Length: 103
Ligand code: HEC
Image (tube, rainbow, N blue to C red; front, top):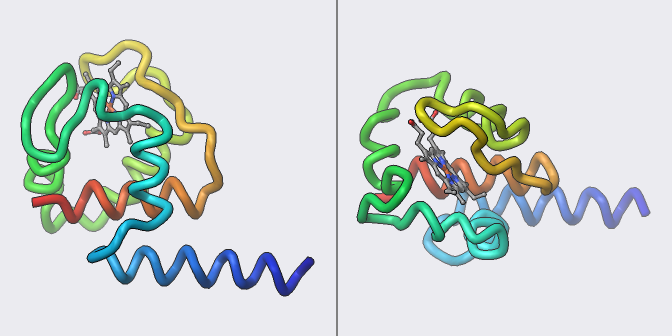
């Protein structure tokens, strides 16, 4: 089992580094229906991922901040009860990496 776990972690790392192809981050965003309120480029109910990437550009604290927000849900800015993501830490981190690298 430990080997399997290591493999899964390695796959997640690969996905974070190789953002050119779909990985757990994209899967999570699709599965959790984030696109009800966010798209890559256009503002819907929530800001576009590209505008978030722009807003947090060069902000070294951003990945941790967004990770914690998505993991815990609740109040984010003007959104009183933001969706809480029920997924592994690795997958949530992968999704944050996808968002922050959106253009
Ligand atoms: C019901 C609509 C809705 C859904 C569904 C939703 N969001 Fe959001 N999200 C918002 C709104 C609105 C904001 C802007 C809050 C603000 O800054 O005032 C936001 C903000 C964010 C932010 C920026 C937080 C920050 O600190 O700047 C991120 C990242 C984010 N959402 C990711 C996600 C992800 C990933 C999902 C899917 C798991 C998701 N959202 C699902 C409405 C939604």
